[in-house]
Length: 224
Length: 224
Image (cartoon, rainbow over all chains, first blue to last red; front, side):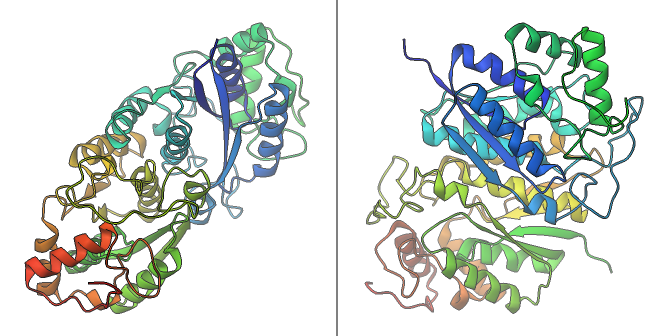
């Protein structure tokens, strides 16, 4: 039977890798990766390619949104700012927030989906356990869905699906383990490209999730 | 007195030029131009630069969204498809529609606005007299406003302003003439970069608007 097509935003991290693992069960995936000048851009692109190879997906698009790095405003893209040590108790928006990044990624994904005639765009955003970025919250995606419905051809009907948004990161790891997702190919660290630092927010969230899930994390850390 | 800053999406056409003319009265403008692989990209960029010079605006950003052209789906970006002769009575969405283009442009503009601490993003979209693109309609912008409010920092408060959306193109030309907007520097033609064809939708809409407004159009046409 012919499966419907879906664009999957695949950064190369755990959440998007598990999202891809879910999508391959029900859809014919088209994998989108966005470079936006983040400091671990090359490493994330390698993860994207290896995960795409793992799932045998040929339909891939790599989009350069370098201007998101050029305009600054984030320690994730500005070499002059240090990525801070992680603090999972923090309530404010951390300096790694990249202004309106997810809207830029989603807009690219929807444009591609409309061209392909795809039925959906899947995004591995996580609300609860995220770093407090405003564009990772369910109400942002709900508003964006309306913009998609109104701003594309009436017959396009592209769904925006966030299958893991309400899950804890530990549950995402459990789900990935169940699906046989290639965690050994993923990259989460915000700071380094060779060996994960084990200290930034993204490393701390990942390490805690694997620990809580009782699943061994297959990648090494400089400090753990 | 210190004026608030506003990002203006400036394609180099009549509508965005008049929008810039409105913004310079009340705001300190930051001018954004987007290349997306459209066939008259180089000519539009020249218009952007000349209009920015005319208004003496130094704060400029040129963003390349080449993937919008690469993914295809539009006669505006695909050299293998011809831009059709204009037909202002048409009711369907013409082949020059670029999938979800305005969301991609707006997302870039909002990211820049958030980094700059700007109060608003101005877009010269026109609903009534447009070519029927879904992402030029007021309800699309209304949905996008919600996504911006929810997807940016709570203290960012970036307004999305479409000052000419309800105006006819003739009224926009009248307003521009009143403001002394540099129509001689604008470019509208979808087909050619040297001399406007006078036959595509965009030329037909422009020519009709100047005629209805009783304002001489300062640019020459190959066929008029």
